[in-house]
Image (cartoon, rainbow, N blue to C red):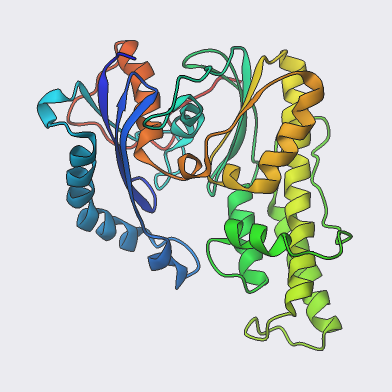
Length: 332
């Protein structure tokens, strides 16, 4: 493989990630300093705390990445950083999508996703569906009209006493479910490909409160539900989110005549979502491309993969580059 060596920096949310990626695919180093434990105490990200942590870790992470790749700054062709769109605290949409093109060190060549494709990106701050006819050519098919799926996982994780982040905790709890009959609502929003999870969060509170009353518990979350009840409720909530995400993605893939489906974003690390999407896509004969879990969460390598395409297209930025939360990524 040949192509530009990109030094990619991801520090837009709660992970300090630096990677060196060759040709938009080959990972030479991918170092991430996680802040999960730091933010667990507050049950969510505190921007000022996250910013200070980035300042603390950016140089040690850079040194480790350069040493792992065995290169110096003179070997680097370009430097890439997250820029937009999205919330100012999370500008990762395109990077999450391009994680599907990445290859780990020592991994043989693997087929690239085929165009046209449909991509579902599901993270703490965003949930959206896009169609890609070619590189950097995006058409927005649907997005969240209120809360993102990852935010709902975090909220319900707290309701169930599972802590932060909610996604991995809910998946682990759901795996122990003995009864698969807990029903949570689905917001289908008619025939649209948009998503809504605000009502699901409200319903989850009502369902959890009802379960607590059944167990003779008060509203104080310190009094935790029995593990078996938590597992059953976790399964029901996860099933609701997964059902809507997968059903709309398959519908979009059929309509677009997609030759492949890409799943990305932090929630894409969820095993139930990965398995269900692959299962539902099989009758279509459409391959599903899902990065390994470590490349679904925030990291520098995916920024390098996306940056390589923009570098090849001739895009350059000056030192006055700043975050642009409203930067358009996809056309309707």
